[in-house]
Image: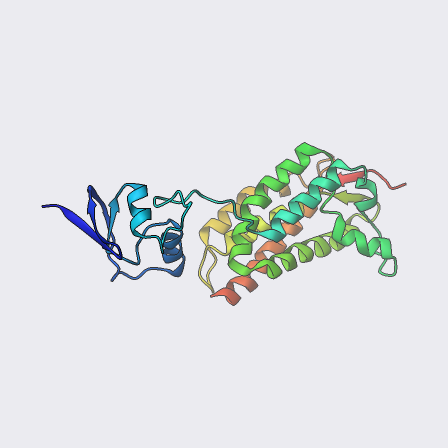
Length: 263
């Protein structure tokens, strides 16, 4: 028996039924928006059919305007998600390519009345010792950052990045007042541990967080006294900060210089 789709212009013969959509089922707002944007006439019928594009467009001009290619699945569009994370990555790329690493690095001791020192508290994580150093850090940041920014919002994500930069930078100046520091590895460890902390329920410590801590922070503890030009202390401090931020944010949701060492 032939099947017809009832549209404002009359009955449209259907060649093949492809999908049955149960509109009585609960659907999220995002899912309904995705169905709407896919150019399917789901407001008009319960059955979604395999139809000729021209025939559907002609029968549903109010749904598919002239010039629309689509009554099938819409082509995916690039979304500018996680603006804070993306802008942070682009700023770090510029700071690594341009010859400004020495000016952006943080150097001890702490000088709270020095404007250059106060500015370096915000800039030292942008500068890197080369593209390999930059990529090793921002592959992780571009994976973890959007997840956190989508969950907590751009403003809190900016607060996390600033908090990690300032607190880890100050701690470095206390522990190693004679050395400089560049790189976002402290921020990387902060985001790793923060993401791991958010996996559990409030009031409990997730096992996965303990495993991540054992793998990442344990390795840094083993190399703490190695003279390799890498600041393991910045990694450890960033990881500990991520754990503390995870405890706070999880509850709220149920945020001429000497040679610089790389973090």
